[in-house]
Amino acid sequence: MNFGEHTTAAEVASAFKERILGKHFVVTGGNSGIGKETARVLANEGAVVTICCRTISKGESVKAEILKESPTSQIQIVQLDLNSLKSVRECAATIIGLKLPLNVLINNAGVMACPKFITEDGLESQFQTNHISPYYLITLLIPTLHASGTRENPSRVVNVSSAANILFAPAIGIDFDDISAAKKSYNAWSRYGQSKLALISLTSELQNQYAGKLNVAFISLHPGAIPGSELSRHMGLKNTFELALSTNYGKIKPSGVMTRKSIPEGASTTLVCALDPNVEFGKYYSDCRVSDQVHPFAFNEEFVARVKTLSEKIISEANTSGTF
Image 1: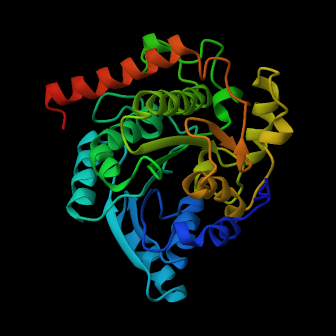
Image 2: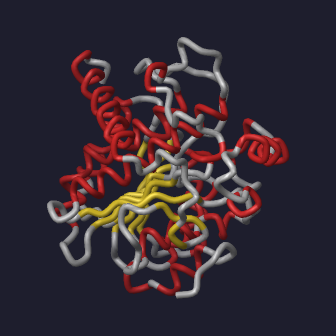
């Protein structure tokens, strides 16, 4: 298929209809932006869609919109607050309780360059929302994902990351010694880039860990620069472009990764990663194809191992302390 930066989600879905009908897709953050478009397009093609979002009423509103367009759609709304590991656990339990196969988990929800906030779990909110909580959700749903896939056609975990991993993360990649930004002044864009870099590295590590062992595959992606997305509410897009141009490592052409896209175009790479039988598992995608425009440490073995160890430690300590 000849997909590219201006391909729409509907065009991708139309090309892979047989891989959508009757399949169960879980979409976090499916109440707005590209998550909403992802859920809408999948539902219109006959998928069973579970939308996970913080505010149930917003999810129900989206469900009503989709049902007007496609009255026979099967849609569930499940509460999920990624700032709370307890909420993640409850969300996973609800999804498992649906007694449905889980063919694709799309970790789409996130925050971008928001003011500093420490969650109830003691973590900087961007790192928790964009990385730790999606990872925890994956670990809780792995048994269901495995049971729903086969070696030939594994279930998929699609992690929506960002080009911010190379545009804004520092040269060291992640400040492992100050994950909660307690020791240094808070740089919202740096913390955003770090959280998205962690998600890319973890995706690669999970693919390496489970390949040939579980019927689950993992892919990460950059959706594009999307002016109409709620994600950019904390900073104007013009300032985002200017900051990107002034801080990138010279490894990429910012005009490429920062190409403005509509919401339908922004959701297309997500659906390529979720549906295309020729997707390369463990890779990072942009503009509907594999991209090498990542931070120098993104796939570094030692760095990736550190990300995994840190992530496991945070989850383990929260569990032991009774935080959730």
